[in-house]
Length: 180
Image (cartoon, rainbow, N blue to C red; front, side):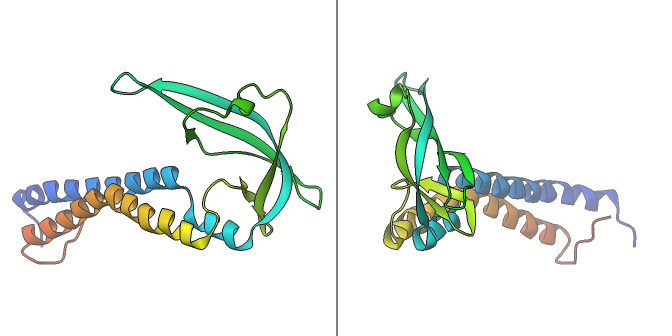
């Protein structure tokens, strides 16, 4: 059975809506992941994390002007740590908002810290005290607030996706859609 051009024209807009829904879902998921990080890694660090001495070896600070003309500060650090078996790792913290603490602004020598890491995957680490320190705090930050942020970022994409599927079905009279 061949389709007439009007059937293809009826599908053009619903398919476009469906594709934009997928783009929003992927973009929203990526943005949420960049903002919140991997919640499972943080949970694993809370439950099974080991500690080892480490050092902050470098810091950075940056300022931007917001829409109102005010300054917004961001900062981060590079830290190193050595495992009991001798393996060494160098990692960067996520960018934090606010000014860098004064003792880190002109780092002349490595600053000692305690680093938490996963014994089965030592590349997963954080400076102790960075992030959630117990399950209840993790549930609130990642489960509660993280879910709200995820819904806000991905919700429009889900709406567009479902709307596109519904419109495709309606334009085909409820028949199965076959893409050629």
